[in-house]
Length: 317
Image 1 (cartoon, helix red, strand yellow):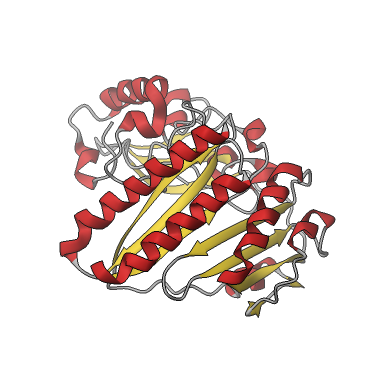
Image 2: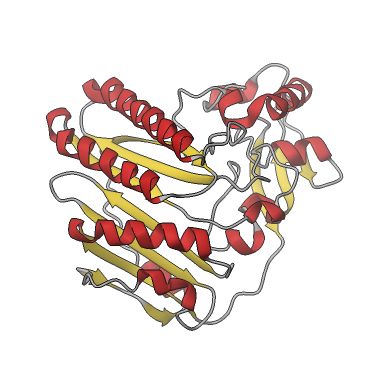
């Protein structure tokens, strides 16, 4: 949440930070305080400003209704289904008008290339919004069902394990075209095929086709009123000696995809990198933009003049 917070309910209510009522915060000088909208600067800074302004010990959210049952689950496909799923994802992003419907499309590269489709609908039935995903390819695994939200979450498998090295990276687009999604697949395929040479274990690209969620945006350190769509790269590898190689590859992939986005007309220079996904090499201006960065630096100077929170690591302002 301190980075913004995308979720299955983002289309309906914005980012998680947009639903905060109060933060309980220990300031760098040891003072314990409650931060809400009456303290505009700190309230703004904690919505995406990460760990730069103190230690957040608890958060009070404005809650929203949750139905007893939702429709959703995971489907895993082989690489042969990728063209159809690229077309379906592009169509869904362009045409979906139901804010209760959300999709997460993951392309995993490498010798065992596969795709993972996560569907979520905030209600007890499959909506027509998911019709583009009625493809002929048969999934290798499917947990789609009408079920409780808890069962939906628990049924999502994860192959993430401890003891690996890895990183996230990102770029933001204004839409998703077939050409851009095909370029994402090509990146996953190319680097996935080469991953074993540098002890790579995971090359993954997550595509998140949100609607215009920026209409719910509040005054936040992470600017999202223009509803940018985050692409999430996740790479993992085994050896410390390959850190620089893989971090460079991730930046190279983001740079190449940015050029594709520009050519496709879906690049916005004012859509800054989502801080929860961005590689640590990014500057404060790249994740907050010059206007928000200047405001955050002023707030930091007021509440942490000695740079105590910089001991916690993270992005420098």
